[in-house]
Length: 173
Image 1 (tube, rainbow, N blue to C red):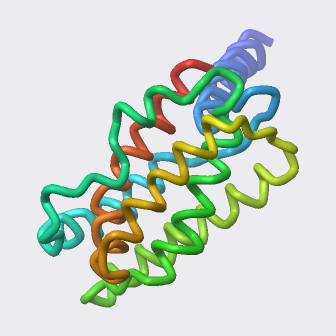
Image 2: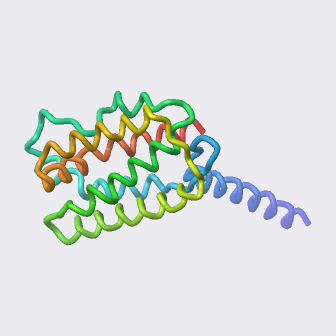
């Protein structure tokens, strides 16, 4: 009986730990929750990062200013993330070409993960304020100032800003 009770307690502790791991992948975006495995996104991004940054010759141009992202208004995180993911899926990953097979696989995995998160967010029915749309428009404007391949390279190199923002959203939950 003591052994059964001890095993039950161990099982409860293990389940508690596992639920914490699962919960850590949940983002609370306004009135909606989506599952995001940031550690996987980071793993794929780490494979791409050094090449993307090394290939960025437009040092004076910034697409994803951390200040801009930090100023996302309350109640707009869902909308902002939906629009940023759309930008990356439709404009960045479709124009980014990684030089090595491993980096190509990581780029595809990131794009697929973003598509999956986007699909989940579409179920949320986010409402976008004009200010949020202007923020995203400013990112598109800076992107459009560059040659398309260079712009995609820069956006991949700056993806760390988005991942940090996602991690911050998880921390605020």
